[in-house]
Length: 128
Image 1 (cartoon, rainbow, N blue to C red):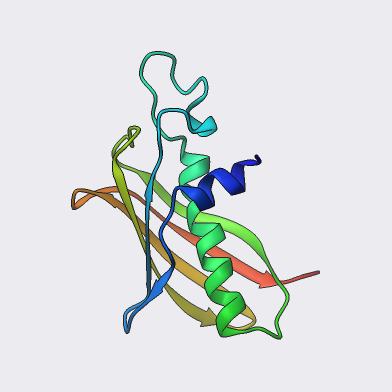
Image 2 (tube, rainbow, N blue to C red):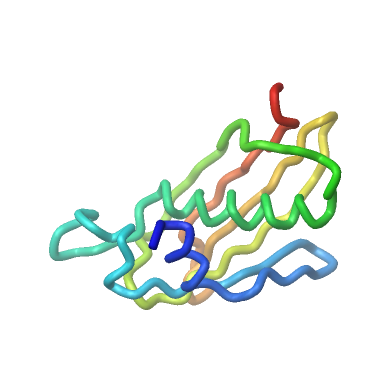
């Protein structure tokens, strides 16, 4: 099973509201993202935390703009504020805005109401 399948099996359905999108995740200690990060004290790597936003925002964009072919262009304004441990419920929320040809996902990850990470994802048309 690849990493994306593990992530999918650890998540809820993406929900849309008036203010944006939300999805929850719970990763077991056996989740491969914890391997070696860190031995004896597993925490979810920042790259996985940004991947959660990327996968979910891409899903939302595909639904909202089905004719557009987009790709992740950059990750900006990353702040990792709290470690995420196995079996903690991680809440992803994000809003989408459009700027020119780009779409920006403004993401926040929380655990028990405490901010774990914030970042922005910039998606652009393929080939740009």
